[in-house]
Length: 590
Image (cartoon, rainbow, N blue to C red; front, side, top):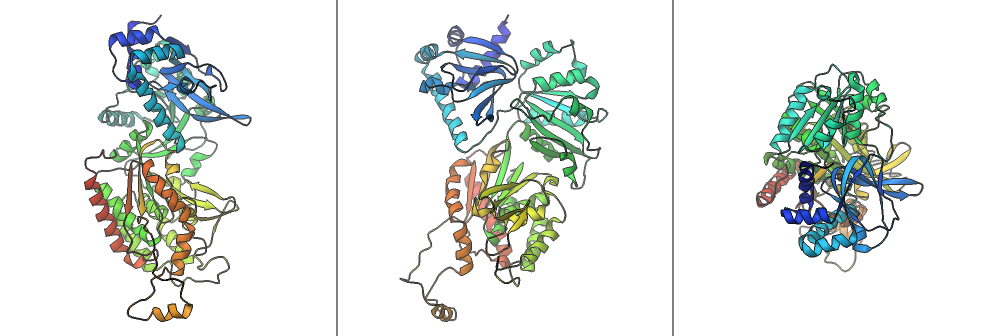
């Protein structure tokens, strides 16, 4: 029997989609609809069904699936305040996806006839639904499988005696600053054997519910995992990394279409050094994301809080050889403007300097010192070899990368970092998020013909810019809502003022004349730019797909101008600072 409070609770999620409505409008909605209770694993409808109702989720969480050969492909999750099945209303065609409840849910069902009656009486309803559909289509076009923010989060403690209450208190305080009301429940809140009445109660809470559990109360832990939208597996980083009994009891890592998202949270002491050997925690575990968090570290707490509510900020840096020094200045300007980054990714030079920045935990002075050493090492000079595979041996670059990143792995970084390369063996883009940092970066910057390819898992890898010079698609696989992309040099036409290419002798003589008659790109520039022409065209499309897009005007700098590192850092800083000042009337990330 539904109470008046239940209906008021449902109304808040209906208005989340349609905007504020009057009492009589809400009565019209209730009269024209049916409220359905769906248990976990129960299907709402199947792909191919010829039934044209629209459903609005009022509580719980649904998952949309699509048949792919003999298996299902997960399209995404639908949470309270979101519609599902709306396409059938517009197209009158069979269902294009299957929808199943991943936990106990409540939905409002409105059939086609009643929907049209409601829209006729309330035209704004149609506008709101259409707006939602357009935004969903935009996300699908970019393959942005961005799941709805969770409501119930299970926190599974791997060490029962490990006190995480100071950490959860800090997170709760930070979420409060972000206007997210948060409640914390643990085994002390058990009020009946099956806990159903408690979970019915907390479903009506606003904001987030943290459900803390451990092996000492396994029945409670099972219910927490059943009723949650997201699972946080929390551990002391310095503890033994073997799979624990609670992980085994809860079957956390069994993969199926109803699996919840799992984040591995590794807690560190205050002022802990950079993690090492994080990969030991990956053995026999299957999770979507891992995060390092330091005790009493305000930036870490803010970053963690943004990530768990899907409000993270991603930074993507484009390729461009020595011009990549400008990324350092650009990031410096953004940090001074108060922008914080939760994920960083890049291609080629963007991979090198992006990883350099996160490796040093955003200490720009240390990064600039690395830039100086790299320029002084002249990593692209005096390194020629017999050009069977490449013009250079790559040895000087490898030595520099070893000096910079030592033996760290990407998964050890405080801030999650990725780079991309082109898998030459199977003509696909490879996203690197784990493994020896210097080797992954070497693969991302291995310009074909200039540096030798890198062998990873028996596959040849070359520069990521060949496939994608500004890899934002990989960023949208993270729980981000805002992505900032920085490209090196706006693309301008390269016009020449000769009718035909001069002979080699004419070009040689031209090199020594005071007034150069011929202004043509050098062989190295032709080779490098030709390899990335396709991804440059793709880069132009990127502008409409990110929150903030910045093209640094570096036309006066060359791809191999390593000696101009100071000028490039300053140029990136000044241009970004000016750009941000011009954006003051625009919403700033975080």
